[in-house]
Image 1 (cartoon, rainbow, N blue to C red):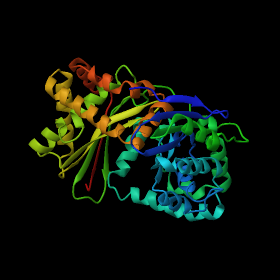
Image 2: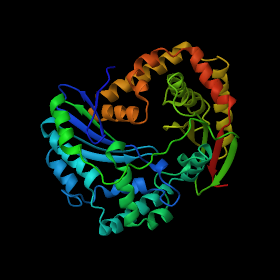
Image 3: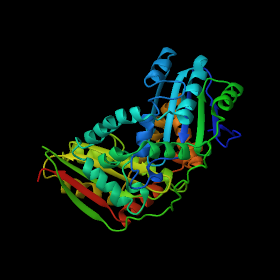
Image 4: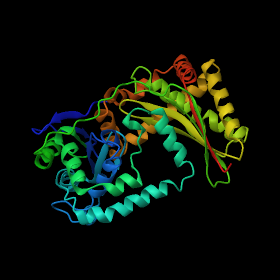
Length: 410
């Protein structure tokens, strides 16, 4: 895969451009190198709240006008906040590309952050937090994340809490916005049917803006695992089935092992053709539903699986899953199964990168979080994974601590 063209504006903002001819659409995405890792306990959730606020009024657009403006031009927009990053994006017909630059730049540089809009948005986010608790497994997920990333800001939930969100002041929101939404913390990704000159000229026209304050200091972590002792937890909820989860810490992505770990995850729990689904769900009827879980952060990560199981089957799910993983670690895995998993991953990647929005997101993640080589060498990296690599990945998981949780009504 060829690398996107990379350049910088005079204000320090990084621009990445990749031409995709013939698709007649363009995706313009502004990646901000900030998320919940740059918050403190008092400001937990402010990155996510700010994401909401940027749709509620800028210098050019009143609250609600952005969606109307883009819809009239055939475009759509959205945003998301994660632990490490926040991304604002517009995908639009190529002949309307300038509108995407206009909207995204106004959001990230010129949000008004009016007190009236803050007051109106807080109940919306508080309701979103409350809905999280409608999921009976949410408390278990919170505890898993807090346990595996203990001692780091990755232990916090991106959405924050009702207490922190309710207490945000306008000044805190404005200060965070001006400090972290700084051009030195931004990467603009442009992918689609647009010529290089037009793409870069529009980037300079709309994004070469400055701030009057220094760039916010980004979290500088270490690539180390802080979770060192296995944990078993039980959670009580009003449920008719049980929810079970197991997870291992992975550390940050390592280009020398990341492809093997990804193939291992696909073999173990990546969809209907995975071992957990074939054996635990379909053959043994131990689980009703099984899915993989994973977080791949800048400085750490986790991998595992979550299952919905009949009442009382949580321990059985764990035992059967660990038996499968131990079998892989012992070398009991067919070459044909590994090859099928590799083909599924490569096919998924090809389909994703046929969509300009997905391709732009893959580029954004890879470059902003320093996974550039992973993205550029993906197919070749997956192809090179051997059975010995899969066995080593399984051994790595089984040799360290594990988090196991069950949510039930008992």
